[in-house]
Image (tube, rainbow, N blue to C red; front, side, top):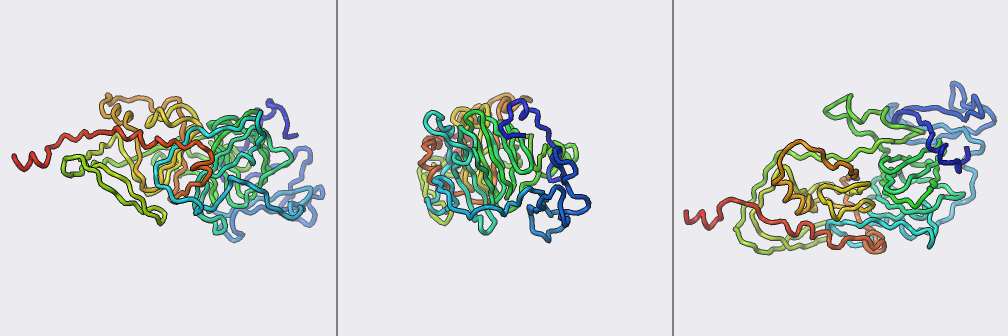
Length: 408
C-alpha cells in the first residue's frame, strides 16, 4: 500500500504477536517470494536480491543470534556516496558543556508552529542528554522530537543503536522496511539498528526517544509473579519488533528507617560533591532528620530521566507537566516535593487508586548522563525554580534535644 493511505487503513493495520520471535512474511502481490529451505539460493524468486541485516555478531550462540533476511528488488548497497547533513541539535559530544549535577526539570517542550516553519521528525530531533561512545558501542542518548510535517522522500537509518520512541502528543505513522505501524500516545515502538524508516504525522507531534548503543532492547524479567506477569511476549505486537503496551515505572524501597543525629540548631554548611570529574559545592542545613518509609527521598547510584505522557504525577502535581521532563543524576538527592510529603504523612492509610488518569515513564541507566547545550539553554524550557519544590520541607523530629539530654 502507498504510505499516504487514509486514516481508515492505518487504523486497521494487523500485527504479528511476540517480541524477539522469528517471523516470516511476504507481499501478497508476489506469492511464494520467500525462498524455500535456504536463505540465499542461487536465484531468488522473482529475480530478487537476498540481503542479510545482522543484529548480532555472526558467531553469537543460537539463543542470542539476531538476524533478518530481506529480499529486495535492488540491494541497499546501490546508493551514491554519503555526504554530511548539517544538524545543529544532534550531538554525542558530551564534554562540550560543564557537568551539571543539579536536579533538572523542563517545562513542556515546544512543538514547532507549522505557520512559521515546517519540521519533520528528523529535523525536529534534539539531543537532551547522554553518555558513552557510539564508536565503542557503549552508552545511551535521550532525545526530544517536535515536528509538524511528514518526512517526504526521506528515510532514516540509525547505524549507532536502537531507538525506543515514546509519543506524547500526536500519533506517528511509521513505515519501515518490514512493514508499517501506527503508534499513538500511551504506546511505544522500537526501531532497531540499521532499519530504514520514515515517519508521517497528521498533526503537530512531540515525544521522547531513548537510544542505546550497547545491545538491543529486551523484555523485563517475569519477576515474582512468574508466567502470569504482564511481561509476556504475546502482549507485544510486531511487524518486526513493536511494543503496543506501555508500562509505568514502579518503585520499591526496603523498610529502612534512617535516624541521623546532629546538634539541634540551624547552621548552614557546605558539602562538596565530585561529579563527572568536577567538584561542586552546595549549602546544607544541619538538622535532625527522620526519613519515613512511606514517603522517601532518594540519592541513587543511577541516573533517572522521567517524562509525563498525560495527567498529573502525584509526587509533584504542579510543576511536572505532560510534555516536560526531569533528570536526576546519580547520587543527586530528589524525591516527593514538600506538599506531597506533608499530605502523605497525615493521610489515612487505606487502599486507594494511585495516579489514576496519569501515565509517566522513566529511562533509568547506570551511566552518568551529560546535558547538552540545547537542553541547558537553547530550548529555553529549563525550570530554574525546580529546586524550590523542596525548600519548604520542615523538621518533624520529635526526639529530645541534645542539650535537654545533658540536663536530664
